Amino acid sequence: MKLVPALQVQAPRRPGRPRDEELEQLVLDAALELIDSEQEITVSKLVELSGVSRAAIYRRWPSMTQLIASALNIGRVVQPAILVDGDLRQNIFESLYGRSLEQAAEMYSESRFRHRIRLVMADRELQRAYWESHVKRRRTPVEDALREAMSRGTLSSDLDVEACFDTLAGAAYYQLVVRGEPIRLPETRARLEAAFDTVWRGMVAS
Image (spheres, rainbow, N blue to C red):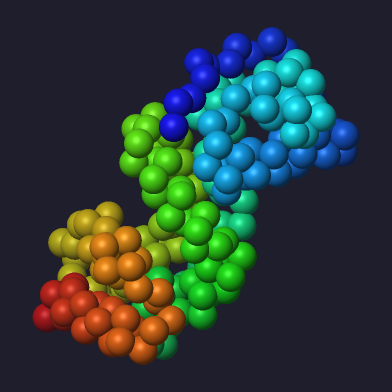
């Protein structure tokens, strides 16, 4: 998808104004409409669909890449903190693959998920913007729980926390992106259980 050049910031946005929030939502809704219909996203189209002026769009987003990243965040959720007490293995498994993920999927359609993958893979700048705006934050609860478990001696003290997360989450992405199978299918969850346990055995303190 061809993106327009970066927008120039003309004036700082004053926070806390309800009208600004309303205009922002109109623009993001328009961007999602274009994304879902697989159309090119341009300022002209956003103005036409949202009714928001170019100046207002310029004030809020310094680049089209950041605007698209903001639109892709709608419906995505950051998981709550994970309890380290109790069954840590189950708590982390449920955070990654459990009901909370299914609820997020209900809010964020599979078609949008697939289109998001296409968009970010086609544009490295957008991929990095989406990483900073959402993906990195979504990892925090699991990574914090792993670090706490390491400090308590439950998990090995020499783990690379980011690599552990990549490996555990990667199993789910493989099912969704490569196999094309929903997480909710029993056979998919069985593969995730097996993959998770294989990695988890290497993480547990001996």
